[in-house]
Length: 113
Length: 110
Image (cartoon, rainbow over all chains, first blue to last red; front, side):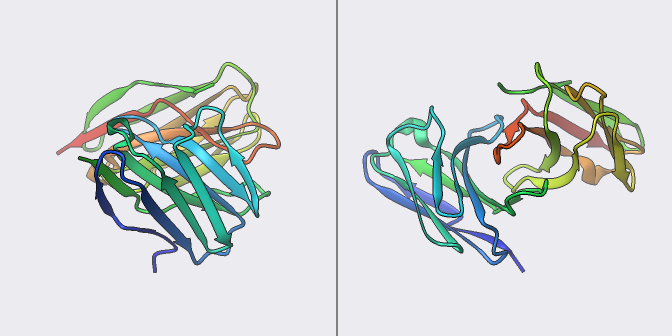
């Protein structure tokens, strides 16, 4: 029944070793978001896609990139993870226009060794 | 600019009421409310769009003031399941992005 699915739930990588997090959705929503959430903080938007249009937040580090090969899938690539990138990464989807809520996946908790 | 929530944290006994406030320095297009339990995804509660609007379901309701700069979430006769961190999310007109508030951690004890 899960509609926004993130894999893996837990990811451990080494300092500087590239890592990719994935998100898929069965809702056919045209907007997809990636958030970073650190302990006891609010989710912070990294970027979002409106259809194929990519929107990067001004303060998202260059180390973070994203791909959306089709409506259903979206990937977050961290090219050279640093210790400060350890966090929960949340994917969310939404129907664009019409004042709709965002639907979140369960997140991927990333640890850096 | 991140909306400010108050209080930062509150502890209630089961059955007590709570009010959580979300304030912005500018008028908003809409405000969303979410609840997040530890280690889980945020769960959508409700959206408010119009100044002066009030809406709710079961024992959770919310309001949006006339100037659309403040929203309050009301939890009545709180249940243990209401525990979690509550976030407001604010949206500017024509923008598909939410900016989440500072969060309010609610703990309900038996």
